[in-house]
Picture (tube, rainbow, N blue to C red):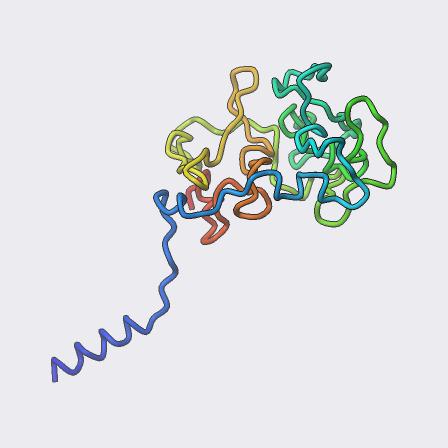
Length: 212
């Protein structure tokens, strides 16, 4: 009888679905997709033709770059929008996020680079256009809590990202570690879709920062 009960329990355990655990070591198995094969290659956007198929050109240039303290030789027009932020009293987006919003504001033309005004009709729409109202999006431009223990993890414990590359990244601005768009998104690698640095499964990306 005991043996029968034991076998029954074992069968139930085996039949119970177990959600796969995602651990840092798994990330090397996720694909690394070069920017050439992503939506950030504007040659893939209807109506845009890049001279010489220079994939990097709409965002970066080795000469005559815009001086905006980004240190990325920026070539694209910067958004002129005033954004409503998630938290009242928060200032406008810092440079790393502002560069992203220079297309994702849904107003600035995506082919507005190299000093060109761009094509008014070539603006992002749908889910890619965040607009100027960021009150319903994850807060950006905020200082990451460093007083431990707290509800937030030590940034030194963040796991690696896809392909073993950088995972969630805080951005140092004025000596303060901040959360920006680039903290969760790697604009050059779309291996996980949405340019995420680590997977969404089991809320893994959320749990990099939040202790829940």
